[in-house]
Length: 92
Length: 158
Image (cartoon, rainbow over all chains, first blue to last red; front, side, top):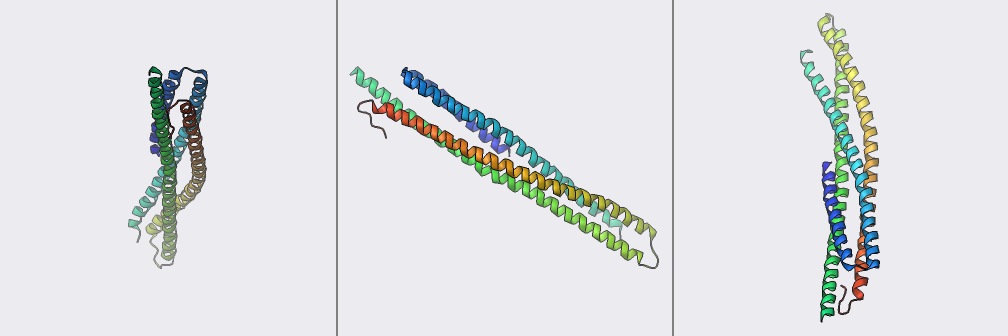
């Protein structure tokens, strides 16, 4: 499950490099139309990423917690079951 | 000549950025695919834990049933070994408690699995939409570059 967090980190790096790239590209042209396009383009992509990364990270945390809870419960019950079988030894 | 140099530089820059946008778009789609491919594995794991709990519950109930049968047959014997009776009664008491606990765990597991499915479906949909939105924006960016390039003489957009 922590694999998703790793993918999110990769995606975050890509997003940051895109913002940086746009900054360099649109600044060079120095015309109003490109500047406006560049700003909208970058801010929309940033906004998509901000919303996605925040909720995806929250969901990833919830899923990790649910997975761990299930794992702990399964291990506890398995231990109870095996431990009870061991106590059968004295009964004829 | 100087003007041509500027045009060539602009054209090269546009070409290079267009390729970088394409690369960025492709990286996002790969990562979107990676996230979406991981999600069924989480459900597989959780299903595995739920199945393990069901197996433990079966084993506990089987042991409880065995202990009750053993006690019944013991009580039908002529000379009842009271020590064995006591051990079995304790075992039955313990297994009854464990049986209730197992039923609660399995029920709780069922609820957690439902919650997991919802979270996974939502995350899958959210990731898919993010991929589409970014794809749309990248196409827009590339189109803008093409439009700019179309105003530069001697530059052909691919």
